[in-house]
Length: 174
Image (cartoon, rainbow, N blue to C red; front, side):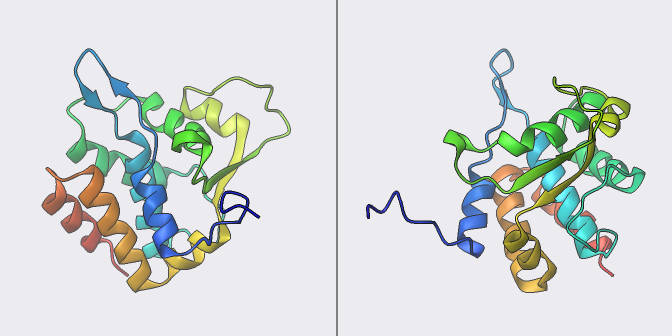
């Protein structure tokens, strides 16, 4: 059996690689990477850390949207629009490079009829919830592993804003 046929072990290193490999949209006009998906993942980890998300079911709640907006205000030069949240929530499921390193999954509602929701109300209509690989969720529950993933996210995606984002994350500790 070739090494490509072997299942990759989904451990901390695997998920740190997933974090680095998130495929983000690059605005070629401005020459900047849109970090909506890493911002969403940081927001989800944040809510798992403070106990707001207690099971591997990521609902589209006001808490999640508000934490996302807080991180967004630090990490983006543009004002928040509904699509800034809706699109990454929907696209993170296939947002990893070359189809590898998938960890974000969606549970579609029975009313989902295709397409990509670009507003929060449409997202809530089309998607019941998202969930992580169970292995990733279990790692995030563990303080030490979670901290390594947060460090990876902030260091890789938010170098300029590192200090501010770390202080926001720390302020929401249980």
